[in-house]
Amino acid sequence: MVDIVKELVGNKTILQYIPSAKYSTVLTTNAKKLAKKNVCYVTISKTFSALDADFKKKGVNVKNIIFIDAISKTIIEKPDQTDRCYYVTSPSALTELSLVISKFLRHDFDYIVFDSLSNLMVYHKKGPLLKFINNLINKVKGSKTQAIFYAVSGGATSDLIKQCETFVDKAITA
Image (cartoon, rainbow, N blue to C red; front, side, top):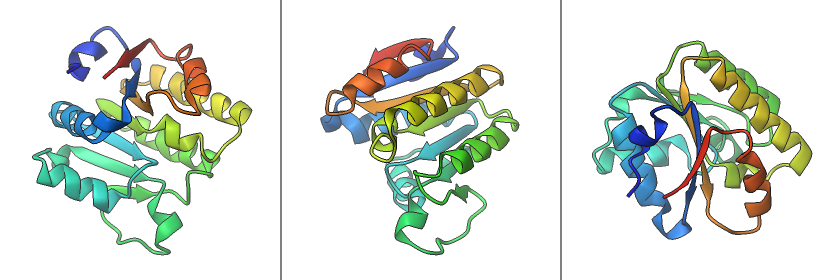
């Protein structure tokens, strides 16, 4: 298994391809390693409450993780408020998501995890999405934070994700 912390040495931004069969395991393994420091976890795939419960159950130190949840408000009108999660309207709201991430980057998190580019691609056309991802990566590079972007290996969005490789410092496979 890839050691995500070692991969980040000398790299500000990483795109990690994860086979769908290993997805949950890799997320948990990476979260355990990264949560030794401060993490901002952007979730497009699971709700904060589901991810938080899963991480706790699997022994991840969630005290060091703050979430940006772009999924819950598409399912629940008013999700339970917590000081560990900021809710974005939906994965379709790229401007809102960008503004929230920018605010979080000013707080000097050690890591920002973006889960996942594959899920975000369901909501957007190629052009605006590539612009958003490039802009986000440039913001990360201008901050003290390192970033990991997840993507499911293969599938219908693989060509678009391949283009994202040109924006990051390194692409790896889990």
